[in-house]
Length: 180
Image: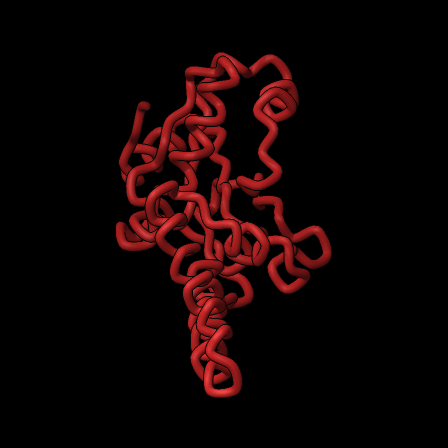
């Protein structure tokens, strides 16, 4: 898989506009994003539709960014598996873009999906422990959360995070998911 640093991508964009998609949730995208990015969340990414919408620009590189690089790597793999090889992952994601001092658009501050998932997993685990005083079988709730976290670590896919990304508070309001 090809990759590029945020600084290199910004320099390319200054020469000629690039096609940069941000695969984070609309809420994360609305918080802070590379100014030249547009939002195509990973959970709704359809490689064929995306490439068809590029109006004949399918041969131009498609750059993909997320928060730190994990979801954008998944998106690149999805694109490559669909037969589109000219996709490039942005190393370090939006975190690296911001750290490099490159142009960003800031909006409403949102709690990241990662943090939401950790808060929910911790709450369920604590609830399972507290309820185990009523019935020891509630420890199964804590074990279930632990098993889910191990699964997410091994597969780089988290069903709980996927579910959270569908929640209303993680969706864009008034169509705010397009770049300026």
